[in-house]
Length: 327
Image (cartoon, rainbow, N blue to C red; front, side, top):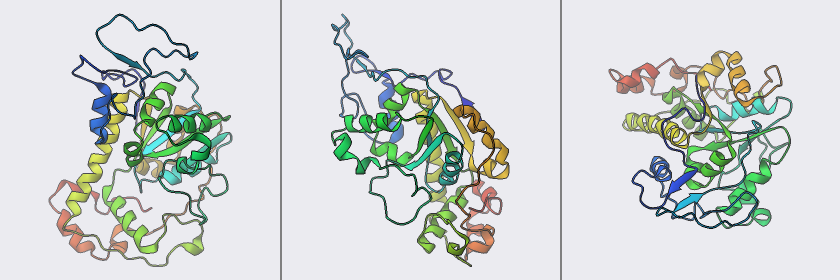
């Protein structure tokens, strides 16, 4: 579990980027890490040249290089945060625990690109409207509508945060400069056992539910099969996602803390490091309302486990067998 304070990385900040005369454009580097076109020439980053905090306009400096200055007002408050992760990594479980702490509002995937389902979910009692559901209030012209939505979200009292998936940051890259400028703290949640992630995806498809909220909803005996022909490819893809996430955080120089799901499950006391990083004063560890979908090990759940074991034998992924968590 490693903490990376802001300013310790030698990488350039993305809060200022040169449009010309610069061979190492940090915003473009982040865009490459996100695998999406992202530069100061796109609509994702508006031209805020010489815009002051007060909204006034100053004369352009006498320089041969154009500079974009993204200014929304600097706020050092520790109450804003994001849990940056990918699907099936235990993020809903973590957010449900954080939301149980006094004074904390931990929201789900607010940038999931579809309206909420009426189905009962872990956050149904307190969930805020997603970005796609808020266009009547915040408009639809990006990036300004995204900035307006985030500013409204973070305007409340107490500790406020939401889940941001890697894929959602690729879809809404303008979120990144907002996080940088507002100095939002980032908890980077990873799940080391990528085989468990694949099993979790397979179980979700089998039962038709992402999470279990009551013992009655837990399936009695779920069996899934993994495609051994694509197994190595899928595991490497999950590895690359983690690498991409770390690269984005490093290039953006965001104040972040990386935590592993397996560590949090094995020792709940490790949640204290998350609480301390976010400056949350509330004590104790609330009970999550998310139940484990599976309580048995990999061999019990994976019907073709012998084939999976043979496919991973003598590879670096063999260490993932039988040693994962069971969510």
